[in-house]
Amino acid sequence: MSVLVWTYIIVGITFALYIGIAIWSRAGSTKEFYVAGGGVSPLANGMATAADWMSAASFISMAGLISFMGYDGAVYLMGWTGGYVLLALLLAPYLRKFGKFTVPDFIGDRYYSSTARTVAVFCALIVSFTYVAGQMRGVGVVFSRFLEVDINTGVIIGMIIVLFYAVLGGMKGITYTQVAQYCVLIFAFMVPAIFISIQMTGNPIPQLGMGSTMSDGSGMYLLDKLDGLNKDLGFSAYTNGSKDMIDVFAITCALMVGTAGLPHVIVRFFTVNKVKDARKSAGLALLFIAILYTTAPAVSVFARTNLIQTVSNKSYAGMPDWFKNWEKTGLIKFEDKNGDGLVNYVKDKELNELTIDNDIIVLANPEIANLPNWVIALVAAGGLAAALSTAAGLLLVISSSVSHDLIKKMINPNITEKGELWAARISAAVAVVIAGYFGINPPGFVAAVVALAFGLAAASFFPAIILGIFYKRMNKEGAVAGMVVGISLMIYYMAKYKLGWIGGDTLPDKSEWWFGISPEGFGTVAMFVNFIVALTVSAFTPAPPQSVQDIVENIRIPSGAGEATGH
Image (cartoon, rainbow, N blue to C red; front, side):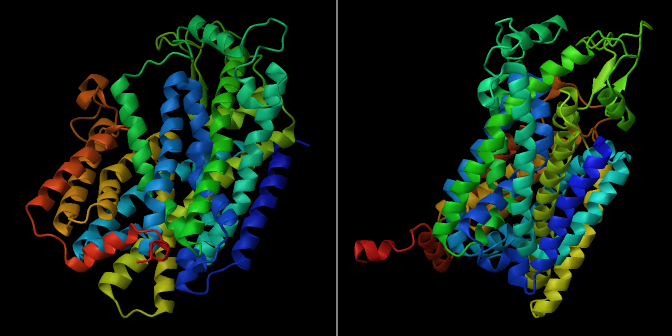
């Protein structure tokens, strides 16, 4: 059967599964809509958290980034993995004990202020919309190739699917859908990786295959081979970094602390019964995430090696079917500048004739390696599972921010539960439309857009949450001032150095970056500014009420500690 037929079959089965789960587990109350009734098992919550966490950026775009950036791409691996550890150890148990299931709810109550809540809602919406734009773009990339439609149509199809099960099922439907999506995406990521590892090195474990010798009898190590191929084309050696150390640190830090401020991941720790279950599900999620994250560098190496050997200096007329198929989507472009009919793929922009979108690497990898059609279709289903699972989680954050934190807590406290549920569903529907627009008009490829969302979360939420838990003296004036200054600074830097909206039609050169830090890493600078502003303002304004300080003291004491010490 053809790739298209296999895609319809596998994607159709997985979509039917997701929609069936959404109907079976539809939410009947606001508690079920927001936190799945609080009765999810740690194992299921761990899988759902992993699926929520591993978005289109992890599945589709991260390996593509590493593939083209080489050693420099490691910042995404370190940042996202380290960030999850930070979240699981430093924040999740305390937020769970505090008992508020949205970040604006925590900030509003901890800082005893409707202004703080409003600022937090604004920040949550900015972060979530930036993040969900990347997911919708990922959905469009998958559909454009495998259903042979254009990217915009692909985004619209994804909008309809995610709207159905997010609006109907809420967190309850999303949780169990995400369990299924985790199983699909991890199977889809590992199967081709294992196939290609055996094909290229004879080793069935991709993580080990990446560092093994080639199976062609040359005795050459795969990474040495790739270094040589890169150098021949004028690129730097794959295993050498070219980024400034300050930028590597800034991006890694922004991704780490941005993780700890992501509203759609934090809310997952409220879907279990006890604080102990929150810790367990955090540990299980880290294990599930590590399976993909330790495999991604291997996939990058396999894909880059195969890609160069397949296309570089080869006849365009003799290009394989996968090349022509991806060319139709516009994500690969060939321009025969010298008219020799050969694909000249080199670093020199004047001589280079091939443009490749980073986001196609994982999806095209099985085709480049001539794997069976069912494996190619399976990867398409995995990419969709990754993008849709995170998009659904983000839409829930958007809808709960509007219906619970804005309408229920501030505009109309007397709204009925049914009214609040309808408000949540309507705001989710509106959010899907806005997210779809940004998916059709994204400010970059998937991982870059998502990295900016992490920077926004780092600049706004992280200091307010961490100080709210560990510093009793932190007051509302300091928190509000820090969040406003932090996110404003980050938005300005993004607008000027990433989107080109400020100071002319062209993007400023890298030499103009502040401290040599890229927009993806600037969240670290904005976060430090947030901390300084928050602590300074807090020092010159009144301390929080004693009741608030007592709450902060209480959430840091483990449950059952009083019985153990006899107090």
